Length: 300
Image (tube, rainbow, N blue to C red; front, side, top):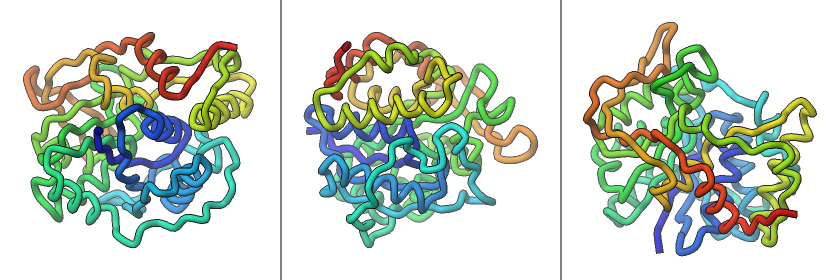
């Protein structure tokens, strides 16, 4: 049984990634730590709780994280995710966030279970940077760390230089990468290799509650704008790679992040041998096969 903590800013792709983890075999989701980003922190916290309640997994605790970056305020991506962040109206959650804060929860889990926690960070890295500031060396105790963020070889998606998650808190991204902790980085170059077409999305059906909700979220995203012909995958790739590393090939590099100025959030490869295993090629068919297996998706 693999134990996983998901650090997330629940929008569309986060929600699907969380549902993947909940339905993956031999995986225990230990908790969700919420950070601002795709949507304001309060909205993301509500989304996480509502999602878990809706699929009958309110046993998974949700922890309040950072509602602001280390400096300034978060951007948001509600133009992509919609006002609610998920595209599927869910009942108001009856569950409440855990009383413990995200950083304290992360520190306790990593200290008490060294080498046993897979940490998947699919939002801005503010919670992880604050963890390292308060409890230095905590990230080195994770069994593995997978991050969705940055862009190393092509233009960004929020500015010409930066990917959204790193742009939201470039200082946090730089501080996490500067720890030298080995990690897998699923950057924007990798994400641009994976698309789900409108036709394919509406020709799928699901046979379990996790898969049905994931499909509703995807299909509603297409319905929100008739001009949308394909959806890029982001956090879904990182989640698959956390449990099935062969879904991507990687190259080892050292990466730094611009922390200010007009190129804030820009990622730069500064050495061809380093602690960051950046995704190079995504096995798209393997990814869709895994998602189909876990979420019980079938062609109509």
